[in-house]
Length: 350
Ligand SMILES: [Mn+2]
Image: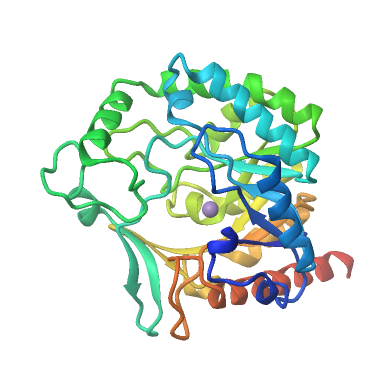
């Protein structure tokens, strides 16, 4: 297991030299943020990122993410050029030593929460999703200017309505077709460059606002892996995204896909499933609905030896900053992952 940590570049309040002090920390997960989605990343920016990380004593081996332009997801004519740009980014990051690229295929909204700073009884704050709050901000039905945190602020409200309407004209099968078109062109380039593509599950793992969402459960993951049956077409197993629905047995899926050699990156996160949604919780199993030891054991038993990062953390100890991405609670999560992995490895060896 290679322990990793997401870092948002020089604008991130969390310092690389602090991340380095987390025991066993080896890899930074990051991306180039200075060009719009769909464009080619400059070699200078990639090398600057790599140099920053290596100077701090770590490796830059995981990209999260190279975002997929909406025109690729929508299957518009511009997609061929955008896919070529995507392939060029794969070649460039591979040359810089990157081994895994995390990406997602969620229309417009990416991850969705209804509150980023919900107070928990212990005084920390966390990200939550409550159905009744989401229902109030449907971009097609609501006339209000309410938005959900995490929405792309570069869209005006009218632009958002237009793009949502385009997706609503797209069926799940259409979106599958566009994903297949993308994978059949991108995976061979990843394979040539020995980089593993690792799709992130829809977050949350159900449809929102009538938009198609197709990477939400076991049958979706089976179908995805079958489109190009090559290890370079793999998964980021996001425990919190899959685990916010009781329908997904994260433990079983972790072992199944690890045994198949198709999990290249894991997001460890615990969630409390509620009748009206879910709350992100501290990583420790007893704080939420997921059995984190069983997940770690399933990964280990399945032969997983890739990258794991603590996914979101709460805000604790008075820290302020990017919701979900403070230092302190993610560092606690990383230490917990170390403990789990040491335990499952010891059981195995004993
Ligand atoms: Mn995740």
